Amino acid sequence: MGPADPRDELNRRRLAVVREHMDTEVRHEFDRTLATFKPGRSRYEIMATGQVFDGDDEVMGYYRTTRTAFPDQRHDNAHFHVAEDTVIVEFDLLGTNLGEFYGLPPTGRSFRVPVIAVFFFEGDRIVNERIYFDAASLVVQIGRGELLSLIGTGEL
Image (cartoon, rainbow, N blue to C red):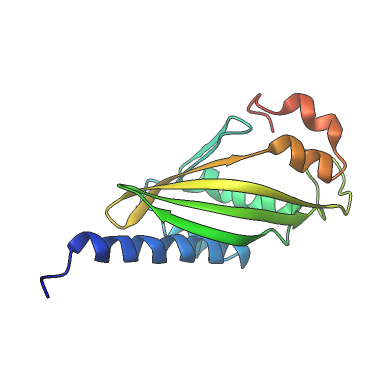
């Protein structure tokens, strides 16, 4: 048996970091979630809405806003794919609108939408999470069709 491929170990560490990232988001342990990013490099790009959250303060604001609107937000059916400097995760995102969402009162309605999240890495730390999902399906499922005109403007 030959020597272990150092890429295999790096990929194992990256997968563990992504799992930690996703699990701590669900548990609302956002300081731990931020620790999965390379220091000073936290960034989210929400492709469906055009929003970018750059830096720890903006990313923490994103966590607090989304978990106020959907405190039970969670993942289901996650499938992990390792690529060169990324980990790609396909999953269903679920939640219930139990708090204010873009200034609107909660509807109490739930959503389930498929998501692809691409986690970009430097070494074994995340430097960007780029998220692709159908925002129109989400807002319609929670009974907020009036928000459809904001999708892709950077405001939603």
